[in-house]
Image 1 (spheres, rainbow, N blue to C red):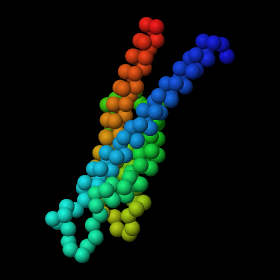
Image 2: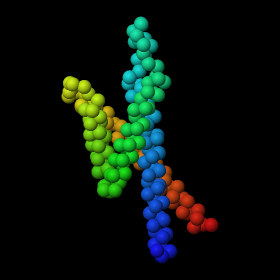
Image 3: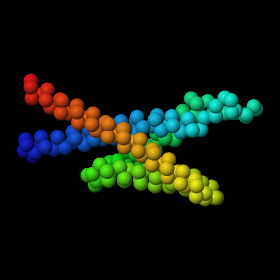
Length: 162
């Protein structure tokens, strides 16, 4: 392999590493955001608590839901994001694929966790929830992509000056 080809190959590896880091960080940051949202929706305020019935504290809900949300983001979120980045160029199309994937994955998980009865409103709510989760991931990934691009260009500028 010639020197120029090794440099190009090295640049490709570095670019893929930065892209993967952006996806990993998006999953890492999206997890507590979505977990906090779910915990807020499921939390029962003190004035609405029934006496003699145990209600989870917000912190307990947050920890519990983190165990559910994190694997979904780290497996499906990163997987979908990586696949989409390989085949889709337009940001608008990427967002559409993210939203559809989030809705589809959420419905699939709902089907797997439902018992005997299928409730259509539950599917619709699940689709909405999955799309919101995917949107959160997409927005955060875009922010990290912009940050990585800024750091790369500012780093390249520094190297040219020195």
